[in-house]
Amino acid sequence: FLQRVESLFLFIWIMCSVVTVSTSFYMSIGTYCKAFKIPNQKPLVFIFGILLFTIAILPRNISEVIEIHMKVIRAYSGIWVFGGPVLL
Image (tube, rainbow, N blue to C red; front, side, top):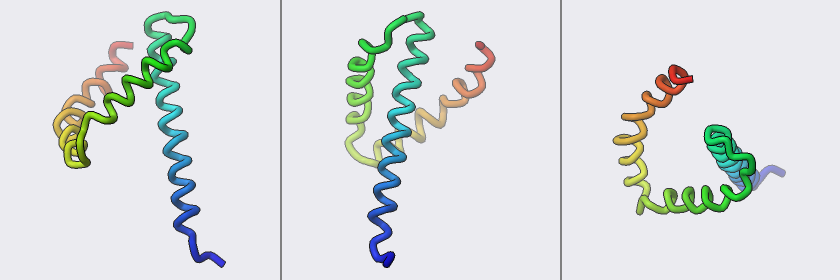
């Protein structure tokens, strides 16, 4: 009966990934609009989409992604995590 469970797992995994990316995208546009007091966020969806796509295609392979993560994100994420609430 349960011979091809991996296809169900893959479907659930992809759906969760799509929901996570969509929610993060929506929250980033909403935060940007609230920070700069922009009443309508619909015109920004296309601009943020192009920006997100451009950033996503910059690394050529997974080793570059890991290298960027190690050098940039790990090094400077503490500033946003601990400095952000201080500014609020």
